[in-house]
Image 1 (cartoon, helix red, strand yellow):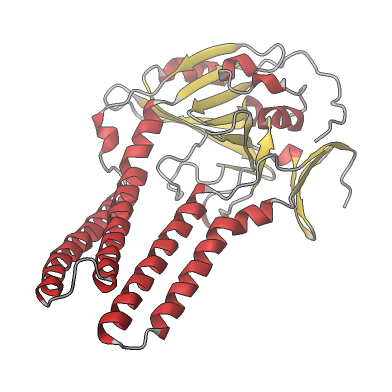
Image 2: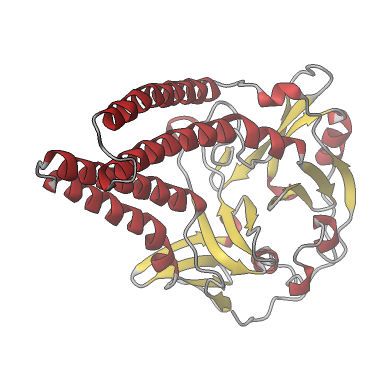
Length: 375
């Protein structure tokens, strides 16, 4: 397959496991610790064999280690390339490619702890319905991912010292902001509004009931152990209390996490979202995330009827060989509530935004062909 001239090559600057994997590893580690504590209680107080408990704890600890270190080990050997025609993601014999002309929009997920480092996700529009599938490549741990995105788009590379600046100060040369706005947010954003939200709330309620049941069992059992003459400083008693405490902490953490993911985090992200329409692109910015969509990719604009004075504006994208929405777009595709998508939600002056979007996008001054860069 013809790949063309290599314009840029690089490797991850930051090698780390995603937050979701680290949280999963923490959960498995807590389960392993609870199993060990109960094993100590059983063998000390009852003298019963605990081989199965120890084996289960060992399996959980191994899984926790895999969740915590596995993705980092995988990412440590990654290589990226941008050629005349493609963006390539490679690790050994595993290779993924996406054509530069096929990219519908891009997302950058900035690392909150390391300035100028983030993940660059390149998304290709796909058909809706039965043909819907996910076509995207994520380049994690990049230094100056906005500079790499500029190169992918055929523009001059953004300066590295631009990391951390507002998005309007990192525009292409000759690009101007025509419209900017924010969604109108209210307290209803913190309430469940989709079937998935209600399902998550029901799950959080179920786990909360498990926590209450756990506490109602733990307190009487602890009192019975003390009344049986076991010292509060003995190893079996300390292990029993530690097991109940770790189990309760795990259940409480699950409740807090579900409520945060289902209700709190999406509402906070929505309130802090900002939309920009420039002469060339549609940009969506929120803390540690941004989306860049070339206006030439927009095939149709669909707005919802105003409700409470605001409308949602969906951008239908022109995909390769089909007119389609991007992955997890509108029209009912499944997506997380806080997913960053090419949709302007909660806009009060939707008519002005739509009018500007319907105008022919103005191209910036033609850039010189990009030259090869060092990774």
